[in-house]
Image (cartoon, rainbow, N blue to C red; front, side, top):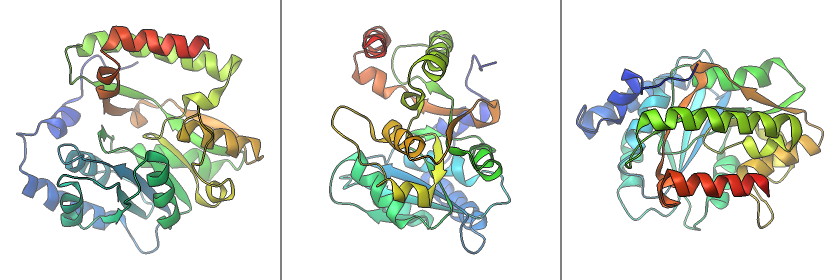
Length: 268
């Protein structure tokens, strides 16, 4: 069952008036350091471009995760023009500057610098539940025939569309994902803000490099499967449901135009 409303802990993280930047920085500094226990087993890689408004709540949500695994967080500052880099550096999280613009380049830079056995992809405008790391890694750790995991997400409205409207929209999107999984191409269901794979296997398929007309995240999943590393695994647990802004839909002109665009893309 999907949540109709935004959970209180997600709403509090998203509320810019709930805490000062100084309080958020202190929280991330303490909890991110506690997640890293010696050599990392898991690397969380997050590209960021001009994300000074979102980066601290996102890092807070990740740093608050509960797992026995050793976890490092890597932010790739993709030539931001705002205060993104300074905020990340203040938290003590590893911040790598990548001057060449582009999501593919940024993700590849993060992958090249990751030290963990498992790499989890994250985005700087997304909030993550406390069990997210464990839920995304566990299928890979327990099943050698799984090459990548991907999970579900819900929208945090930043435009005129209400959360109630998105509640129904998300169920339609879920149905399309199941159709892709069983009848078309499951790799298109994989998004870069909520997926996980083995680092060595990702390096063997040249990371996120992809041909024109495809996306870096779904194409990575396709390459991993076609290389024989295993199958894709859809993590449906509510404990792994992440919350992301609807700004991409707003860029498309709102939910109506965005839905038409996505249906056309699905049909093609």
